[in-house]
Length: 58
View 1 (cartoon, rainbow, N blue to C red):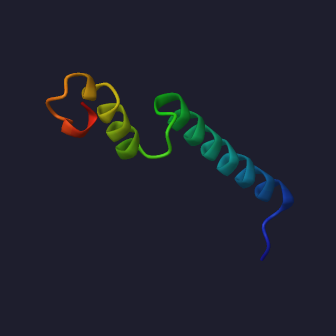
View 2 (tube, rainbow, N blue to C red):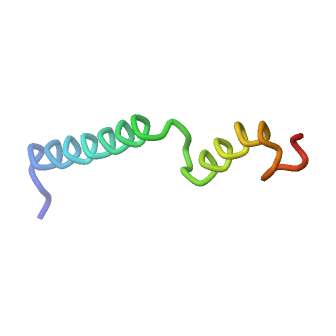
View 3 (cartoon, rainbow, N blue to C red):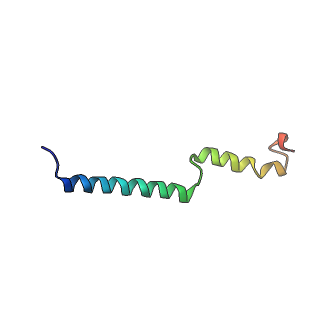
């Protein structure tokens, strides 16, 4: 019992749409691949100005 060509095409289109929407949503929210690393980079970036939380960046 093989599914019809229409069913296969429909499933492929749904999967592709979901993947594209997920990728677009992640890019729109956070350009970086991992939120943890981007958060660390953002925290380490401007904070050395104060010099309190980052002694090596004085």
